[in-house]
Length: 114
Image 1 (tube, helix red, strand yellow):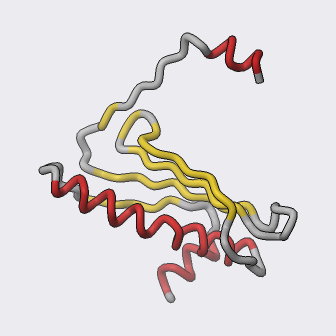
Image 2 (cartoon, one colour; image 1 turned 45 degrees about the vertical axis):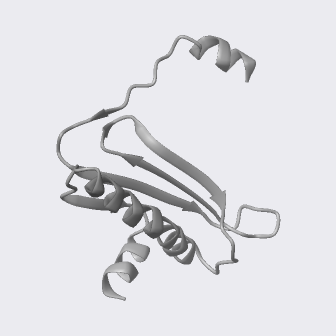
């Protein structure tokens, strides 16, 4: 870890909106990786270059499949997605799209079709 810190101490974090007025949320889940078989959620928000916010946390419930863990992960991001959109609009920055990206086809189909 110290080697990593030493090698990256001069690196700069660059945040830059690309002007598209598009919020891009990337969410993923790891199924049953905790000692108590809970899954884990990770998420990142970007509006162009650089991550504006990222989160990584243990899910609060046991899930029965990777698909279910992905749906729970998407659900955990719904609140921050809505809040961020409303906050930016209240500051005078209109948001045209609020997109959620995830990598589990079964979860995407469940979310789209109910």
